[in-house]
Image (cartoon, rainbow, N blue to C red):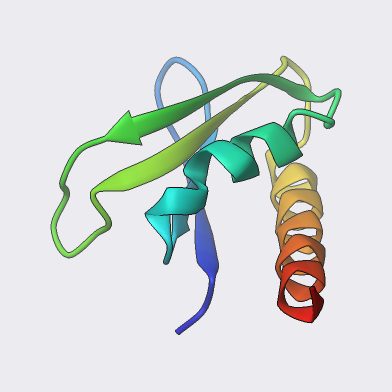
Amino acid sequence: MLPFRSEIRNSPTQPTIKIFLSDESLDARIKKHLEHFKEIEDIEICDGIARNRACESITVFLKEDVDINKMKTSIDSSLWWYFEEDLVD
């Protein structure tokens, strides 16, 4: 099982990136890890159940004029690095 997956969500008000972790106990640690991105406006940990999805997710709101596709790639790379380092420790 992969440690996470991310999706771009196109909302009428603001596109977001949703991150679903296989271990929801890491939500707060991952939120703190992502706070170093200057392109991120806000990060929320959301409760809720969608069809066949995790009960919790992390929603990343980007600042205006930020390329969401590039940010998703950057966030994914950063998270892969995070989990690789965590597995080594």
